[in-house]
Amino acid sequence: MPSGLPNDIRESIAIANAKSVAEQPAMLSNLAFANLVTNTNLAQQNALANQQAMYQMSVTVTAKAVNKISDLSPVEALAITKLDTSNDVAQQIADLKVAGK
Image (tube, rainbow, N blue to C red; front, side, top):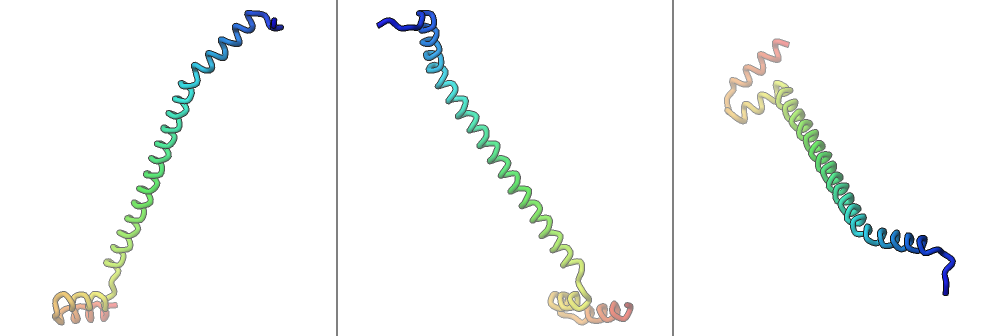
């Protein structure tokens, strides 16, 4: 049964089909590589965000600890010194500090 298409058009369609079939593995390989690169990039961004959050938390904890240590009231300082040394010199120093205010 003769086709209504000329031979050169049929041949070009066959070549185009063969070309698209031949290019499919390369296109799929490129797509897989693009997905791998994207996933790796997202994983690195996630790791960096977690690292930054941990850094911010450690800065906050350190600042709170330093603030707690440096802002002791005379009574707290006395209690700590008495626990450490068990002497009354700390009491006398605390009394002098309070009297000086």
